[in-house]
View 1 (cartoon, rainbow, N blue to C red):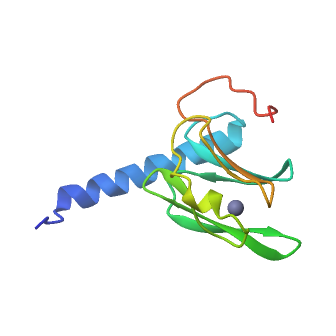
View 2 (view 1 turned 60 degrees about the vertical axis):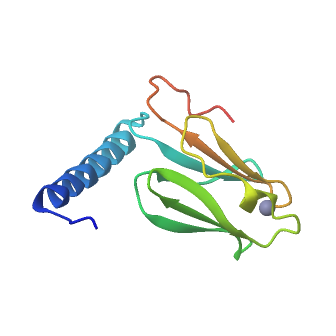
Length: 125
Ligand SMILES: [Zn+2]
């Protein structure tokens, strides 16, 4: 049995705050503070999502959801896809710099970026 004490709640709040702050700083400065996942579809950037958020991202092609990416606990995982092979769903969650999940049929690529690296060039594809 784990009890959630005041300290734990405080810690979570602090973590959340830093996560949010890091994301904001990264956005404002265009830098790479804080790890995030870059989602590309057919080589085009679909979106960027901080790894510290808890959320699900429907990845859409032509208005239809083809993949579902779940972010939580500092990692990103493909939890659903309507591709025939489902290889992307079987791939392990990613959390480290330059780890990727690829859905070949949909040309969807999920890459972890900004995980404790400075001067990373975001133009790289
Ligand atoms: Zn797939």
